Image (tube, rainbow, N blue to C red):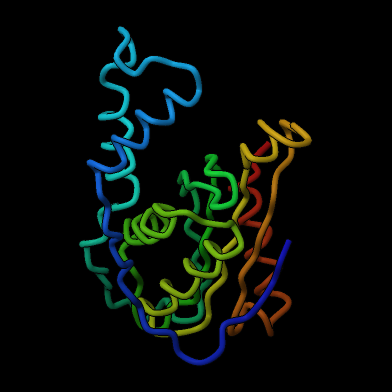
Length: 206
């Protein structure tokens, strides 16, 4: 588990869309199949390069267009809010293998609350790229801090990585936990423990 803090006020930033050459991706997948001893023109593989190129295009360009909706709730100031049940897939940038990330986000409202769907969109947008779990955790925390206008944010992530369970040591049950805590979550031990108790109950329920 890693725990670090954000400093200063973080502005919400849009996720840049990569330039994807789908035609070149199709060609490369066809070449890869040939290099693996396969025949890209055989039955069963004829549409594979197109399907793979289409998937890469969709995965690397997640919908990030929705803006955050905030609702005035002055009486909730100081309350701990934890949003869990966020589950996304990303790709390990070291091996190009999938990783499954379960996310819980905590924040302290100050006069307003954020529409719940925004947290899932933030996670999806940061997962739709070549990633490492530690960076993903920090990026989600920074984006949430930008939306709420405060660094009182904590993000916990539980990840299973095929690059560890499918290759290398092949430990199928291995999991990785990461934590990004800032503001009151890094200075108030009671608030921090409350968040962790709720977060890990959600992302590691068994």
